[in-house]
Length: 112
Image (cartoon, rainbow, N blue to C red):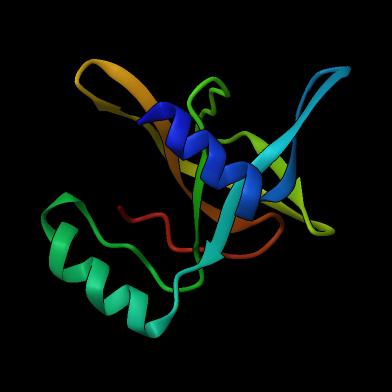
């Protein structure tokens, strides 16, 4: 499954750069806005885990690139701030990293 996810990210993902001090790592990941339709579907599925506010972005990236809350990343000329992230597993294998992002410098609700 991890190989399939890596193939999807390579084929359809955008270039994303994460900086750590002086070093930077560039890789492919999916970054998409939470739209009205997507928000309604997500709300039904994970409402008990906390609200997913509109104006955020969903990130799906490779399992070997660890993110943490508060970290900044860049893609398509825009900078984002990691709000929340989790590594997702299948049968004890890390398959991908899921995160919620907000545009850096913008106001966002941090209630969840």
